[in-house]
Image (spheres, rainbow, N blue to C red):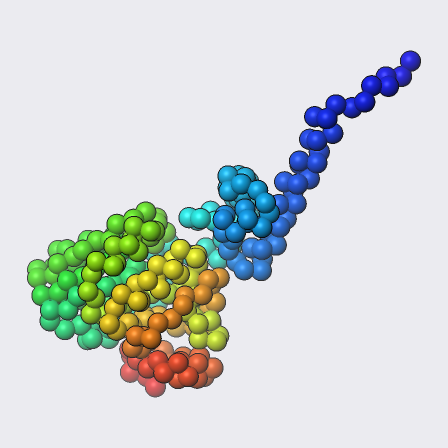
Length: 273
């Protein structure tokens, strides 16, 4: 005699839950394709689930090699920032020229904020023959280099250490900037889009670099030619006190026009253009 008992609710619910999970993963991957990065908070709100659920979904995708986990979300594997060591090796001569050119804007007694990155590290190397400076930085290598320079006082910004950039990022890092009077800021960027926008790999890094720019009287963006026409996922909002861009090659004509429209002077470190 056939069993006429109804299926239990548990047996009916399990496949539905699995489908919902698959749907969330597809949604996350679709948004990664569109924007290059996703936020846990935004996904949780849009999908109507807890942040812990989204964290588990991102962890699943990370284990599949389809996403890289970052603070507060995830980014596509294709837009992960290379390690600092790899960036140091790329175009080392061009970055050294940028660092030397940038150092000429630093004068005795200044308070200087130096962002993390391989190009800004070249600037720090160029500052080792100066004295009577206060250098504020979130970069561990820059702090280690300049703390050994006589006459240079180094202030390290606290926060969570990002192993890729070998630097601190986070709420504590940004909050600390409010305590300092900064004469000049030297900023690195993840890329410069074809429209002349400064961009970065994560929302956290972009927000922190915006806060860094706001803290100084004058801001110089340091970027070698590999950053030209390279639009990493997140836009860095500009500030009025951008004093110029220091680069190693003349930018392509569309970029040069975009910079001119913003009235951002371009300083070519090797004397071209």
